[in-house]
Each structure stands twice: as structure tokens, then as C-alpha cells.
Amino acid sequence: MTNAKERAEDTCPLVYQRRLPLSTRTVNHLADLLRRHLKTIRSRWRILPPGKIAVIVLAVLRHDQRLADIAGGNNVSESTVRRWRDELIRLLAAQAPRLDRALKKVVKQGGEVVLIDGTLIRTQRRTGSADRRNYSGKHRSHGLHFLALTDENGRLIWISAARPGRTHDNTAARHDHILTHLRAAGLGALADLGFRGLDNNIHDPVIVTGLRRQPHPQTHPR
Image (cartoon, rainbow, N blue to C red; front, side, top):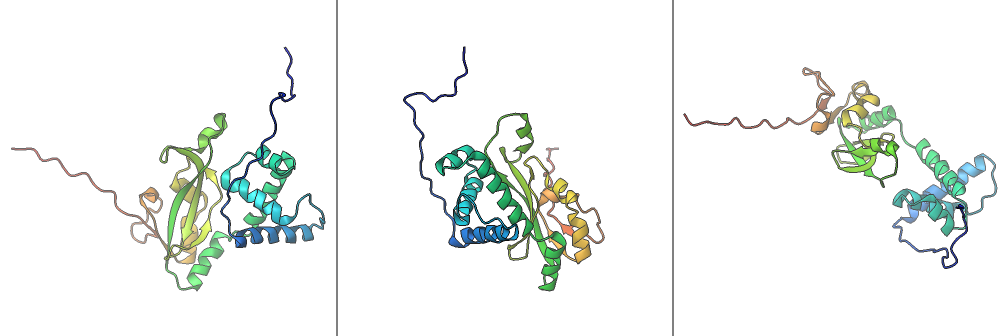
């Protein structure tokens, strides 16, 4: 019994198109980041122009497409697409505002309170036991957990790093020292019931959550 890697005679590569709704501003922003990075590291040549690389990486991130499929459709290797993806993710991450600076900006603009919530970005289910931690029992789906802060009008001001989908909101908030940063900035926060127990200061709370509805006592006929 042999393990042959040759293709069957009746098969051929298939290249298909898929619509990717992206704004010109998004593509140009990512392409400009890459151009500046290439100029900084004095790398004058890539197999594809920065604009095309930006579109390929956005396709990978938006559709969670297999790298081998994207690579084959663009006549590049899988390792090349992986390198482009990791490179542009690092460039985007470097632009993310730090939590303390984001809160200071809110104070400077006259804000007094922020909104905090956790969200799950759904991903495809991967094989193997390593992906089990990405399963969220609450959402009954695989994904990555993010903690987000917005201003009073709902505009995003800060978002955390990605964590496994099973991560609880309180766990993520404690890891990022949300309570400490809010106290240092002099801001309050409104949150849902998922953040109950994060701030136990009943006299001067920083994080305000709703109250869990108490079940009505059963009445029994006398």
C-alpha cells in the first residue's frame, strides 16, 4: 500500500470568486500601513503590491478562509499568506489605544461614564481538543471573546485582546484591571448582569450593574 500525493487524472484546481464587502477607506488604510512598514524596514519588493496583499488578508480575516485556498487562488504559497496575515495583524495591533489613554481621552472630552460589555466573535469550529476552550456555552458557538468599552453614545473607545470563547466577562475584566483603570481615571461604568461581583464596593461603586430579578414567592391557599 503506497501513499501517493499525485492528483487523480480527472481533477483540476478550481478558482472561484467570493464577494467581500469592504470600503475603499479600509483597504487603503491597511495598504498604507504596509507601505510605511516596508519603507521602515527597507524592504522594496513583495510578490504582490500592498493593495492586493491588504485585500487578501482582509479576505482571510473576514471569511476565516483556509490559507491554502486563498494562496492557491492568488498563485502564492500558504506560508506567504500566513506571513502577510501575521504581519498586518501586528501593524493593526500596534495602532490600538492603551486602556489608560483611552479613558483619559474620555475625561478630557467631558465624559463621566463608559459602557462595558463582553462580546463573542464567532469562528469556525476546528478539529482537536485544543479548540474546546473556544466553545462558549452561553452562545452555543465557537468563537473568541473580547471586552469592549464605549462612550455614552456607543462609540467604541477600546477593545481587549482576543481570549478563548469560554472566557467569562468578569474574568476578562479582572485580567485587564478594568476596575483599577476606571478608578484612576475617575470614571464610572454601566454594565449588564454578567459583571455582577466585579465591584464589591457598596459605598462608592464604580461599575454599576442591574439587579437580578427575584422570583415571586409562591402563595399557598390557607
